[in-house]
Image (cartoon, rainbow, N blue to C red; front, side):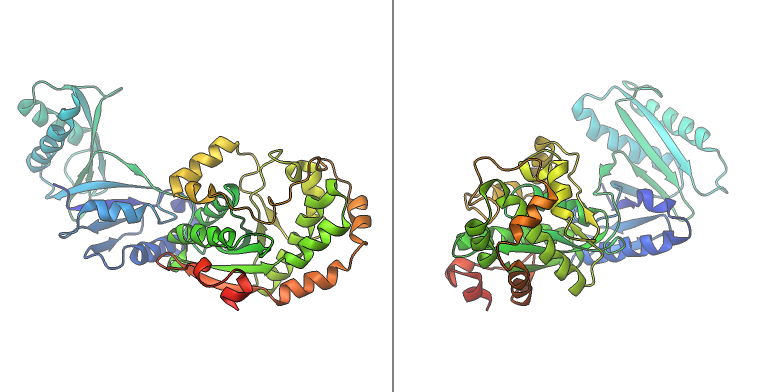
Length: 408
């Protein structure tokens, strides 16, 4: 029934003179994500056609959901530019739909081939008449139909489809630039990572690990999260920077008054992230902050925390509610992993009464209690980078009890 899939680019067609670069990047992602499937690509300037051969369309649809920059796609039938043939295929599609008790329909035609001897409205009218002759139980409803048949008359053939399946949208990686994401084992930061990839950013992740203060399973959570996220990334892989945070963590717990421990901890993380951003030649730092969700995410807290850097900080989840974030996490497959009961350095020692309106001058005064600059430089120097691919099998717990033992 379906010979292929029509892929639409959406907002990319609004990119003016840069349009061709964005579309080329999407097409490269299509070829990469569908590699290994015996399909044929026909890449046009405003859309792509994927001919299935003998490949089940479900396999192609599954992979298309990992391609950023794709606005929507449809299962299509292709035939000659003959109205009788088009109507026959249309009736078969309607028969499939009538299982859902469809009683009304309309035909929408796009005539890209201006040499075809009828206007779009005339084609729609003629096809509707042919359908009604063979399916008299149907009625035409141009305002609120239960079923819409889409017909495209192009130079080479006619294409017929019904539904549009929503794609990821956004922009193709790496058209948006490069960013480093602060990735914990929680729910929010993986979603922020996904949204950054969706916007065409090439991401690398930073995880602050405090083994043996925190269990090795907390680092395993991060690797498992990245395996899921890497399905959306360029080449199905993401680099993760494991920062040894134990000494800084211990110093904060020893020297910093409890209400300010999270504030100072986050300031140290942003300092380290800035060093790594510059080392990796990235353009921005991304966090999973959502305004007001916890004490460290009030506007006053975020201002105090980011005072330590001049780097661009992007917060994709700033205005999201928690339930909305959880829905995205569920849809992309990270929620269950994030809910595993293993604490990271941000959650293992949560103060009873954290400062919700921390003052920058107070934070600076507290930081004078220990030589944080030496510790920050040491943490940066001993950071270990691991490239995680979506197909990797990595079991940290079977290799040691600390990241240093596992990754060396």
